[in-house]
Image 1 (spheres, one colour):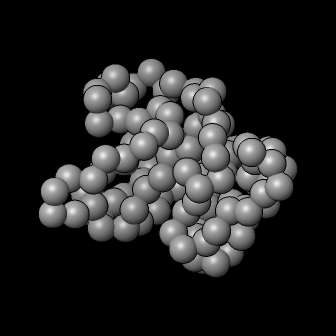
Image 2 (tube, one colour):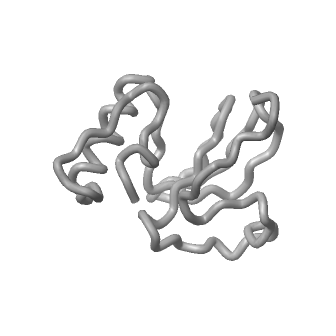
Length: 111
């Protein structure tokens, strides 16, 4: 995976290596999180997501089993790392529109 393929938004991912090291990737993701003021929720089990783009509701449980509810415009579910995805075993994850690896995106005419 090259740094260019891992870039998020307008934040460049610079590295001295052909492929970024784990520590470099973690630092980069921290910078992206800070830059965009992302509300990251770690170590919570998502029980249900309802709604649609721009109006999601997330029902989750934290490490103490306390119930949590969130509203979000967008959702990113990150499991695994680089080329080792952790499959979630949920309906739909086998569909062609679901990505488990980074790949080249081909532009359609008019984009």
